[in-house]
Image (cartoon, rainbow, N blue to C red; front, side):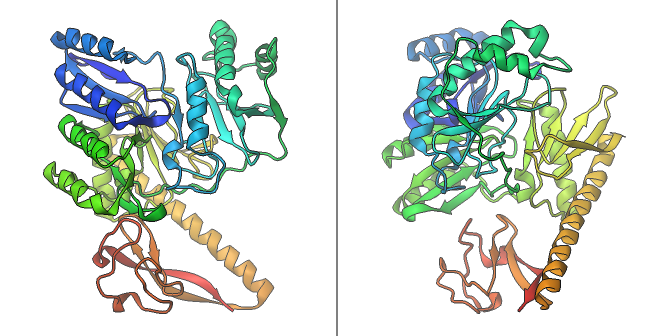
Length: 485
């Protein structure tokens, strides 16, 4: 965290969810203490800065509202969760709103270590950026658990599944073991996991289930998380991202007021430093549009600008990202299924497909996970000791290399299938939205736009993207090789 002449205030939102009324109260306190903007952290927490001479105003407001906060400190990391993805980025899991809330309510302490609770069917919220990483299993109310000791990269799989109601008690016990034996488990090059397992289980009777099969990581694909999007029962969700990572308090207050007026109960923060609102009625869309227009809020950023993880409140990371995104756009680079992290400080816990890591000499190393899945921990060094000005070219080369691997892999699959079925390969033309990457394929048509199967894209009048509602001129023709039976 960079030093400033102001106080930096952090407020945790367990699981990345908050009611509209509670958020409005926080915004009012921040504004009364001299803050003008709010930002979201990569653990779904809130940050804002106030002048040093307004500290008393802040403390009085927080005391009256009984809000926990930290100033220029991060002793208590926020509990992050994939609650935000429920019903929009995945719908097939037993892990629903009530389960999340029940677990949050059982935390009777503030964790000093990082706790992640994620659904294994989604890839929007990182799996392993915590110290205690709970990942849903196929068995209802049971979780895989992966331990990452603080300030290390090694992951240890807990040998049994953990029951939902035991998660808070387990975290409290395990945290006590780690912090009580720092010389064994905190920032150590090697840790004895068997000893840790023994210490945690001493005098504790947690409900466990045998692991029937190991966790299988899903293929990574970052969903387009911005703009108005239709989902269940004709409702909409709205994702809001800001290029400078700062949200005007006045804007957010109007958002909260409209939520209360239209009975939208909750807002969500994301690990990608954005806000998301679910449950918007079609009849109210014009009111939401009015607020976005009034504050000149852009909700059509390119996908390659949304897939970045940066350290919190780090201006140097933000400036470097802006430079690299400009280079990507000039090259017209495809970054689909990739995400990037910039680490100016060591051991920050940021995960990505491709990591740009600052060295002690002020240069940069580029690393990537072996399979380019950000939830993997097996990193490969691509290039070392690069200047900031040469990073863009090397990253472009790496992205081209990755998509070459994908093409080679797809061709091998096609060849294998062809050998078995004795059919041939043909090239078809698809149309892809450059904003959200959704695809129109005439072989399937588009039920949302009432387009029947077989209609050429160029023959559709007034086409609207069913995902992000971009117009037809935002679609690009792409080629795909498929088998013709």
